Length: 98
Length: 98
DNA sequence: GACAGATTTAGCCAATTTGCTAAATTTGTT
DNA sequence: AACAAATTTAGCAAATTGGCTAAATCTGTC
Image (tube, rainbow over all chains, first blue to last red):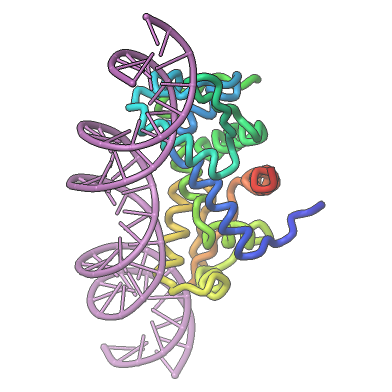
């Protein structure tokens, strides 16, 4: 199917997804999650921020539908739900180079 | 080439591009520009905002490297530089549906 | 049940974003 | 030169975002 014109509500929803991606730390986490599920503490160590901060970032990604979580024991594991977002990076890289 | 890990600076640059996309009006304009170049006044009429507002939105897209502009007479025409961003929409749509 | 660890929620403050109006700039016309 | 149209820049107020610390919640262990 070709690129049909989204409704205003769809544009708004799409913008929400892009907004969730519009943060270096969240992109780093997504990149890590593309290799497999990770708990919050692992991701906190990865990005070097406090756990509450990381938890809220993950909450944003989850709300946007990009990741999902599963509680196992005392830990919560996040995983990438839509691997297609990884395809963005290639295009975005080309954007930056002209 | 596989998905190699970007540097912190690259993550930051990518986030900037996503941030430029994280706005319903800007997405609408990009969609319109995917059909061909448009002047600021046309885009302003399309999104229903004041021209200064639209001008600044376009400035953001240009700074992110997504669009480029060309002045012809008293008008400035914008065009989509990286059509690959249109591919995002398909994936983003799938994000919203689960 | 007390306690430690992992996670989330709440509250606070600094920084950014957004949209507007007003002013400045540029271009084409008379 | 005067004027009108198109665009950008500047300045302002409202809303949102981002990170922290403190407090609350949940889980497993002793």
